[in-house]
Length: 464
Ligand SMILES: C[S@@+](CC[C@H](N)C(=O)[O-])C[C@H]1O[C@@H](n2cnc3c(N)ncnc32)[C@H](O)[C@@H]1O
Image (cartoon, rainbow, N blue to C red; front, side):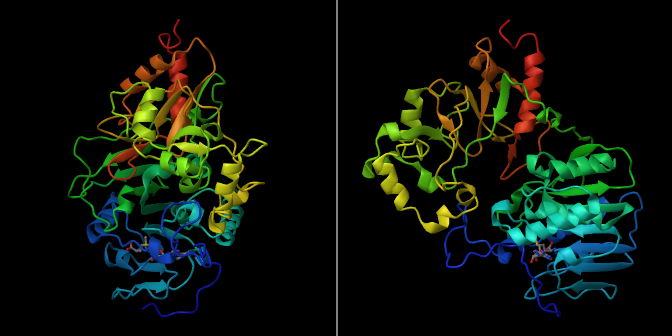
């Protein structure tokens, strides 16, 4: 057990009084500190040390933010190791004499270390306590002169602290999802790293690595070398023995520079998040039982999984067969019309308070009043399998896209949706994106906009 003082408040994890089975804004379980206490397998700890000490880098001082049982202290050669662990209930391993763990919030770490290593806690943005996040933002802004923004997940704030608590020629080596390199929410961190010309390497862990909870399978190892002034980002695959693949070289990531300005005529936009798929997107059976008429709902899809990869068009018939009759959630309530349908009104009256007050609904002037985006001419799944490629279809019947289904707006009649679909189907998306969960990859809106601007510039694209 870590011996120490009581925990400082606020806690990073949101606490929801009276909630037992759902996380507001998500479909998972109640957030708790326990949920982010993922233990790093020893071979990964050892690999992280090996990767970050290459080139005879021998750190005198080591910092571990979110140290857990202190397993990162058991490897590597160092002068001293200091871990920060918030939870006094976590049992510490027998540590070397030059290692110690403080039962404190990582926000309280001070000083400069030559190496920040570890596996920071991962918690989705929806589950972060806003007081803790505001404190973290203030601290980062004060020290880095940059507002990291409110939308990062917990691990991303820890990556910020790690860069702030390491010396000018130090290194950061963290086990965390590699997608921070492409998410819009972490743009400020990327710009900060780019400005300092630090070298970033993302090591992709093989699927054989078992974090024992399945969900964390998207973790990789991020290495930031501050002493290497070269501002490159490379993606390196690790073999089953966790050593870099021979001859694999490193790959450049799909550019995110196309984030701005996006073209007025052709751009990608993300799916609507109404605040609760279970309450705002109905199955056909629920719609009929609640007597909600078809003109009080929009056809909507939150996944393209039911469509075979060979599909190129989401026709109305395909929507009916593969979503409506298949019993999937496919009817988005029309809540924005001035005269709300009485059956929709009755349905909304039955929505639990925890949903009405979750981070998405609670932020609206009227908790259920979302603006439905104009349906895109093309839909694609932003999460895709690297072996099968991107799932992308034209959308002639105007189905609304939700969540990870993103859409492409085509503002000029000269652009043909089917030509764009064929172009995107032939694109090699496996080349430059970072791994996501369960062998899947993910493409961010900004990256798709980069591809679309290359498409617009290509003489064969515009139907000329
Ligand atoms: C993903 S676990 C990793 C534990 C250990 N480093 C390992 O690799 O096995 C992250 C740890 O961070 C701790 N933690 C969460 N929020 C924290 C905070 N604000 N300050 C310090 N530790 C925190 C959690 O209790 C958890 O033990």
